[in-house]
Amino acid sequence: MKTILLINCLSLALISSSVHAQVQTLVVDVTNTNSAVITVSSNSFAVFKTVNGGYGGVVLVNMHGFNFTFDIDNQNFDNMTFSGPATIQLQGSTYGPAFVTVSVEPGPFPPGKTLAVGANSGNVQVTMQMSTDLVNWTPAVNGLIYTNTPDARFFRIQMVMNAQGP
Image 1 (cartoon, rainbow, N blue to C red):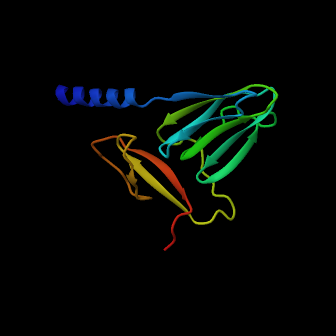
Image 2: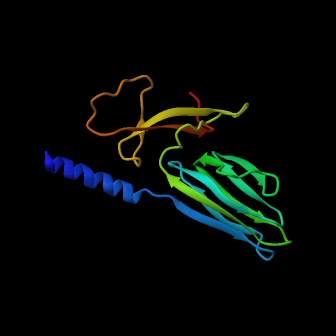
Image 3: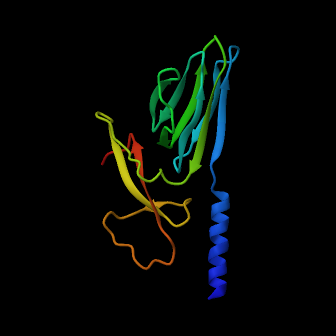
């Protein structure tokens, strides 16, 4: 019994230590107005932490195949959160520097958040998925009762844009 408990604790410690947020900062100035690109994988989510662009600029986000442009001077970025797959890029102005700090966090989309399918979005597939390790995900059955399972189970909602129809 103690051996099983020790193995389970070690497994949890390994999973916990390998799963952590990655904080990245995009920087632009008058000579380089296009930043590098941050990639948010499909099993991660991103949170804007700091945005500073006193001279203007825009943040370009491609999320689930759709492009969004956020004006640094006119957008509230405080803890703006979205799920992957996505890319983030900063475009500055020729008047001065700007930077954006983003935390990319592995795991499911944060609890209490929702996914929305906009009007005229084309074919969108929404599925519930399940994992025991937050890395490998399999389809979950809606309404199925999961009881007395040997491992903890994690659930997430996955949205695929431009899905192939029947």
